[in-house]
Amino acid sequence: MTKKISLCAGLIIVLLFYGNAFSQVQDSTETRGEYPYVLPILGKKAYAKGYNLPLPFSASIGTIFNKQGIILEDFSMAFTQGNEEPDFDRLQPISDLIVFGPSEGRINTLFARVEAWVLPFLSVGGYFGKVWGEQTVTLTAPIEISSVTDIDGQYYGLNLVGVVPIGPVVLQADYSWAWTTNDRLDKPVLVNVAGARVIKRFVNKTNPERFWGVWAGAQSQKLDSETSGNIPLGEALGLDETALNDLDQRWETYTMSPEFTELPRFRQELIRRAYEEIIRPGLEGLAGTTVYYKFKKRLEFEWNMLIGGTYQFNRHWAARVEYGFLQSKQQLTFIATYNFGL
Image (tube, rainbow, N blue to C red; front, side, top):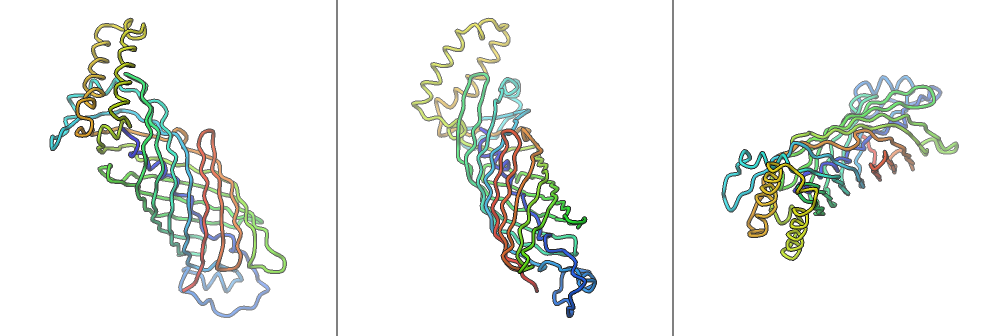
């Protein structure tokens, strides 16, 4: 029931953005004219002191692949037929018996981004993207169900990037806000991402505008915990009429097992109600039943390590790749950037 809800976990992902800090090096021996661009603020003073600033504006396109686990908690639901209003209180005691197992999202994104260096050490950017993929959700109680559904949505956001040259490296920190939405959610889901990287540059000896940059760092992602929305029951469970017959057989097997018969009587009754009023209604009107949901969610791992690299072909064009990892969490990003001045 939560497949299309957590595409933000992808969203996740969406926030591996960082500025062109690699060009901020000093060249005090070069004789230059006036700084020709409107940004960054204080750019003329920095330029006059010998700093080679990057071009102040950039436009990027990129793609991200993301895989990570999501923990679902404090689940509430209500069922409706037609235009009925959802009543969350009626099924709350039963909802407490629903236990979710591992939930994993495999998400792809395609995004466009613009950025401006407002100060020599600070950039501001905005982005918009498309997200798609699939979400696997496992229900472990009152009966085991695992379903996979498609994810299809959009995201948009803002990010800040700050850089500080320290000797032979550049220290970079960034913070992003991304909102992910689709037609199943009541409101966009916010994802906050903070990251830090230590960057080392290797300049081409014959062409100073061409260089490699490599980095390592860490990143933290945090989801807005409250999520609510609605989805057709058949789509949420990922079942058709044929598969539902098998579900009934598995339920009968479970009710005759020692795991069920050794439970206290009141517990058995609650579990029966959980199946008969939450799972079983879909057997009679799968297409016409809508489930409304509310729950809290968090990432299985909020932190991950980062390694990456960039190659700048000239002052205008650059390409980047970055890999994020921690146990089951993985994300891979490719970005192509065009830098320009105004």
